[in-house]
Figure 1 (cartoon, rainbow over the protein chains, first blue to last red):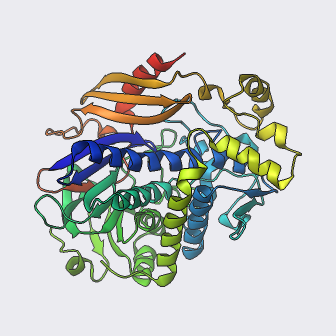
Figure 2: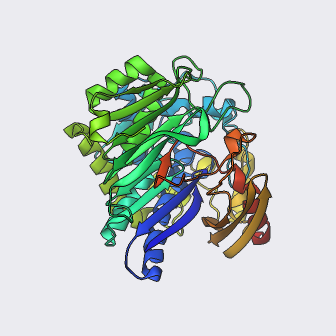
Figure 3: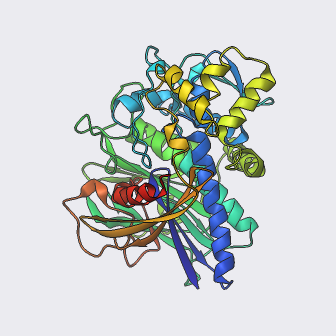
Length: 307
Length: 170
């Protein structure tokens, strides 16, 4: 039997599909717990909620602030990604994102305007983490944006809780960021299409995944309402959206890794991004605005690519 | 799938493992992030900015009212949304140009606990929806299990969520 449940979280639709012979009520409880993980992370790490733990931290520049494990791990991961990509990925872009029109809480409709963080040129180097004490020091007032990390992190957490509850075969999809566990109802590895940016109802091809994550970063779902042609993706160095790629898909053992690096590689562009993906041994497919596809070296064999 | 470096393997494992282990005690609805932050401020003994930042707790409406003014300079938003909802589950429906949707919003301790999609004709659309490029909800084409794409927004559910929240208002 398969069971599918859908929720709204982190301004996207989350669907969880389970293949199991177990009792429906039990599956429901397990899914509920997995979804609870999503909301826990959203509550702690939401820059659209002035009362989230994240926004409280953002207000306290210059202080050593002790934070929860969720927030610490999310920021730590974002900063490590920033270091790895030389700042192509940077979690300190929150205030700029607000100014580009990405400032509305999707549930309450309230808009944020964090003027406290206005007058500084911030980068990830202005964040200091003290691992043992779980303390974070922000050197300047800033708005941290964890949106390219927390969706993946929440998927991974949901996967862990579902596995711990005894489920083997399921798929968690947070608006296109997916972890596929075990096998589908035909007892095959899950068949995951990669959306064609130029044709919304078509895929450019599909991969087979069992126990792995696939995330896509693209400029075609969230355009900026203020600047035509701009999207929710931001090149921190240029203060503009990256224009070369229409989408970038990364496959990895963890969703948070695929999530963060699909965003980072989008910003880095085809040559630099591909080089980084090869270096990190991550499987990746990039699609340009001219619908040209580039793959990392062993992508097609490893993932049974079909186009 | 390829093997990633031990460093990133360790980073991911630690992030998920530590968050999972801590998840059950840290951010349960009853100990909202705000109060957790408050406790930590006091533990660290730094009190200088306490009244500005840590007292916007949802439980005390007086505190949050007086605090709203203080926070006005720092952020245009206040903590008003925190306590205006009654606990319970509320259904909401909405129509948009690609179909009808229904959600069930659960409020616990005055906060939105979850938003479940209870009916969604838009999740598996069979026709082309060219005129609404950025507003289409998750779909599955018939020959794959799932599709990975750029993160979709929740625009299609906006009216349904508002409908449910209007019923939840105290």
